[in-house]
Amino acid sequence: MQTPPNLDSFDWRLLDALQQDASLTNGALAEKVGLSASQISRRRQRLEQDGTIRGYRALIEPSAIGLGITVFIHVALNTHSRDNARRFRDLVRLTPAILEAHALTGEADYLLKVAVGDLKELSRFINEILMPHESVARVRSEIALETLKEPGLLPLPGP
Image (cartoon, rainbow, N blue to C red; front, side, top):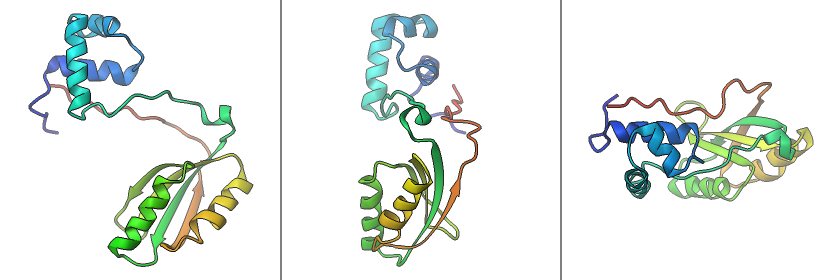
């Protein structure tokens, strides 16, 4: 992997520390990275403004809020036109149960990661939201029995 030219060793350490715990204050980050809190603040702001840091969020345990089933759904579109792809992307963007969506090569056009409370909710999602949608031809779902790793931290190459 080629190292981006605009990131130095302090940036890499800052990114690593934030990936581990984004709630750290600039003072705590300064101790970990080896810079002053004001330098951390400026670097953090630059990394946010240039899009290297896309945002911050809390990681919530799905089962703690009633979302005990994770499902991976392969979706094949009925036609491969720009308008049809746009309609499907709009559906994905507007559907909160869809946690992730990836365009694929191969047999399926998209892979969705979906969180639902139970099998009845999954059935409703597939039969009332996905299948009737004008852009969708076929779906195939797979229920995750166990999550071995989540969320993954990006492997930071460093300088």
